[in-house]
View (cartoon, rainbow, N blue to C red):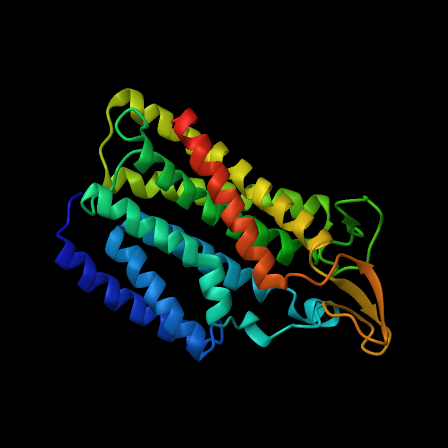
Length: 288
């Protein structure tokens, strides 16, 4: 399905405005997050329906899951915000890299959607693979965190496998890891389904596109594990005896659990997304 760049730009501005405004009203985004969300959504949808769909499936599912079990999360998360309201830093950390990759890929393809086919273009395949990995990582980490904290199982620190309190950076559960796989697979299914309407591949290339589902599922798991390792090592976690919660900064009433205070949660997310996107961009050239 070919559409003119002018139509896509108009569509992108309209749909991004509506979604950003609705998200702001529903407190999924604050004002700065709404503005940043509008910009990145416009970039994605102007580049193609499939890129916009990847962003939306991450944003909508993560926003929905953030609101699941809010009472339980409020007791655990010291940075809990009603509705999971996100600001511009969180928006850009979770979509900035993909926005750059989308612009580069679209410029190289003349703003037309393409199949994952390294024989046709290794560079474009690597860029698309990086975009898939980006949102598989984002979705995997979010689903893992939001559902894992609701599990009755006690999390274990990924670096030592010792039991830790809920809310500890780098803590993992079986439920959380399974959620990461499902989240990554959801991104793959989205990419595949929308591709049926936006691009035509030769029969042999079309069959290979089915591999994008297990590819993205593994990317979701990989991204979640990378995020957990970073969280356990270069992000501080400690238990505050006053607030009776796990906190992310050292203090006189805080007993250290793990990690050193180098990166905050946004920084960890950004680095894990960057590493996962890099790995999937390389892997996609060999797989597709």
